[in-house]
Image (cartoon, rainbow, N blue to C red; front, side, top):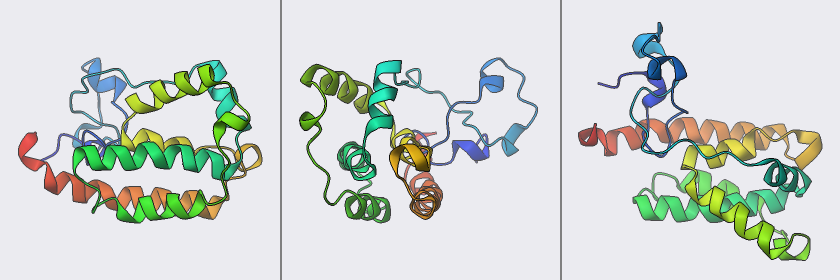
Length: 165
């Protein structure tokens, strides 16, 4: 039994931690849409420079960047099969992406990679789905498909790792 709806898929595909639960006063209980399970690290956040870089990327460049880290996470955590739909969507959307080194310094790329490597699978997908259509060129239907695929992934991962709670 999960402590909250948002804990589904913990640790790689759950929603972000519930700040009210952490303070000891979440009134939503098991109906809360945020995660009530322990997270070993604070959720990594992009700094201002990294957000500017992300916002300046073309849609296919952003998706290619996220795809690389999502594929690595899925492989490392052993859920490539369960994440196949998401990985396929990302791969298809990343076609035609040019290398980041064409427009961004090596130092900025290194720093961005460090932050992205610390994000969980769900955070990476949310990075893509929450980008403004005008800024990153992400089409709403693409974001909707990715969000739906992530929602489909959560219960499958919960079933795989149920014994770890």
